[in-house]
Amino acid sequence: MRRIQYRLLAIIIFIGVIGMIAPIIYTKSLALNQAEDSIVEKLRSHSKTFKVYSKSSEKDTFQKMAEEYSIASKLRVTLIAADGTVIGESSLPMNQLLQMNNHLSRPEIIDAKDENEGYASRYSNTLKTEFIYFAKQVDQNQFGFKYIRVAQSLKSVENLATKYREFYYLIIAIIIFVIIIAWFVLKSWLTDPILELTKAASDISQGDLKRRVAIRTGVIEIDELADNMNKMTIALERGYTGIKRMEKVRSEFLGNVTHELKTPISSISGYVETLLEGAINDKTVNVAFLQRVLENAHRLEELVTDLVEISRIETGELKMNFDYFNIFDILKNLIKDAKQRNTNKRIKIDLDCPDKKLFVYGDKNRLDQVISNLLSNALRYTDEGYIKIKANRRDDEIVFSIIDTGIGITQKALKRIFERFYRTDKARDRQKGGTGLGLSIAKHIIEAHGSKVYVDTVEGKGSTFSFGVTTINPKQ
Ligand code: ADP
Image (cartoon, rainbow, N blue to C red):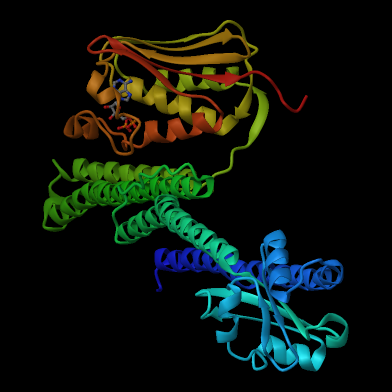
């Protein structure tokens, strides 16, 4: 009985049983009693009428009087003397009267003797049916008999009872039918869906995040519960996949960091060891080895700086300092710097600007860092041709493009170059310098400016990295 379906069934049956019992009790006690009461009432009034009738009757015997009144009233009429002798009986012929036994002991007569009137219902041996008898005492000197008794067969009441019984059976059949229907309806609307929801919840709690509840009952609350449960599972599934992915990214990142740091460190210790083992006195290599040590130390420094930078960006620790400023001088200085650094005579470096007033709204140092980074990449991956910084006005933006005629990027690599530590050709690129974090940092910074970095590249022909920065100053 601890299952909801059995409890519901118990409630339905309980209501059904009450529904069956109620009309039975009602008809039995009330309706039948009422029927009897009204018969008694009728008999009483006939007993009074009979008194009047007997006074005016022209019949010469009590027997005839009883017979005549009986025909008119359709009742059984009995007239009894004070000593209990039946002196008139409508339902028997005259010659059988003497055989009737003394009636003084009949309950209705006893009552009539004591209280003037009385009634009783019982089976009549004389007529073989159930009767209701009503007796009334009168003045024998005046009427010639002491008791008038009128009686009606209970056949009509019995007929009524039979009718009621048929009616009960009908009600019971209807109620059983309703119980069965109600049970099936409740089962399909309530208990079956609840069972399915429970099973699904148990499956999900055991880790089956692919589990969905497939029920549609048309009952709003149940359907909403199922929908919400599915939404919850989808959210859980997504959250779980997200966490899994983050864990993977984290461990990959850690692996990369370790690897990237190890390379320059082992280089440094290798050179220092060799120097200590005697190479320090070998004038042909000692300076060159120390230079390698310094290079690797610089590389380590660069790596650590980029790592700190990226971790600050990703933890949200790095705050942008937005300002409205002219970026022209920055571009000019970056170009000047690049020209100084560039030793390759086959590369031409240029700035292509509409005018000297290039006001933008953004973080001055960060934008400097991004353009410088893209410029370094261009220098790193270009052997001949030109490298250009181009600034274009477009709507409410200045679009910066860093263009080179370098090696370009394959379509496959293009999808990944913004990932941390990604390099198209690990060995070659590391030799060229760079940490593999530059584009990843640049992407974060430009996104913090509400913009995006676009790459346009043809393998073997060159690449263009571009992004827009707003010229609208929100502080004005
Ligand atoms: P790195 O510090 O190694 O340059 P980045 O994140 O800046 O790292 O760049 C990631 C990778 O994208 C580089 O290793 C390189 O393979 C490719 N890449 C970036 N810029 C260019 C470019 N201008 N031309 C060709 N390849 C480039």
